[in-house]
Image (cartoon, rainbow, N blue to C red):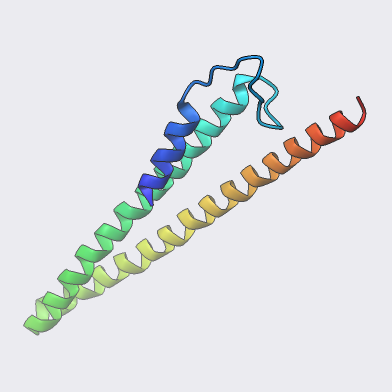
Length: 127
């Protein structure tokens, strides 16, 4: 999934030369702030997904340790599992929060894109 975001970021980062025959995107007003905003947005998505992956990798490690402790059946290892499972639960909450942020940011981005398209359409109708 991270590869997909890298490709989108690379696509957004590529400079586009325009000739008189080229057509701009319907809501591209020639302003670089839109492209910079998109690049920043994709960087934000990528960073959030990296954070999610890091927490999931940690959870994988915790689960392995819990399983090993459980199989050993020693008292100390079983007691240690309590804190490991608590960390797992906290990490699950972090993942939920990160995905919630990603969803909110994505919805906001789509709303802004739709607003920009609507503004451009209205400008064309009035001119």
